[in-house]
Length: 173
Image (cartoon, rainbow, N blue to C red; front, side, top):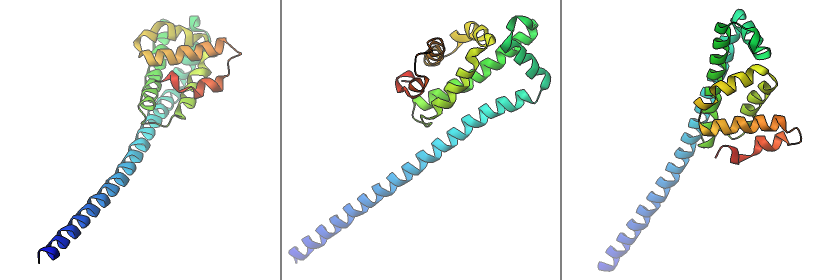
């Protein structure tokens, strides 16, 4: 009787252990699905914020014209237009800084850096960007300042491979 009871106990232990293993596999699958859902939601949110910035801004033709005027010739705008343009650039940079932060934390795909880099890099040919950056750069995180300064340096050093900069993971860690 004792031998058969021992067999039943061992079988119960094996079944219990299998139940735990199956539960852990199920939890792992749920965790992966939740991680993907979080990353997708975060990416959508970041993209929506940046798209909203562009949409709201460029729906106003007067504001768009003043902004473009500031970007190309900052000395040619009124103080009010200059202030609004700098605030618009500041707002966009806050969105981009947030995206870079989330990428560094592993919440956003690292390929987003190419998009962020191009958004900033495209403004580097404009005098208004430098006026903005010199005035506001100390208001951003050190990581964002370094990121933008690296892009500025890459623009000055035409021999540097920009693609290498886009793919350099050290710039956000």
